[in-house]
Amino acid sequence: MANTASAKKAARVIARRTAVNQARRSRMRTFLRKVEEAIASGDKAAAAAAFQAAQPEIIRAAQKGVLHRNTASRKVSRLAHRIAKIGA
Picture 1: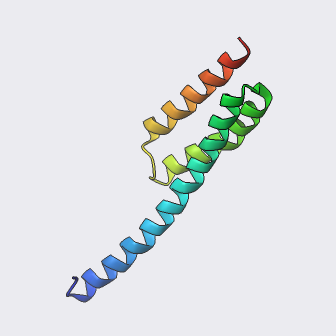
Picture 2: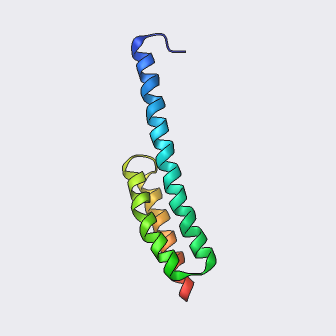
Picture 3: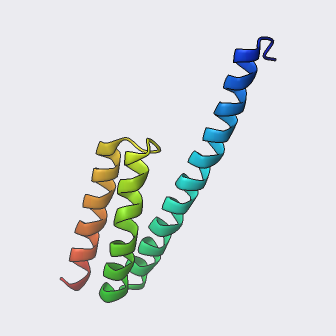
């Protein structure tokens, strides 16, 4: 357990940041799940619409430090590729 005042404050800050990051990660995963469901259904229009909503969330998660930027870029790229393959 934290003993000094600075360690106690650091513990509070970490708890606050953890809660924010969990919320951001959960929000991003919700958008990803909607895209995955649309892809699974085979509806290209719905998948594209869900992807357009999910893409800014993924990028924002990377900007806020929840994801590494390369991970976010990879996720966006793979989703776009999968959506493009639906009609083909």
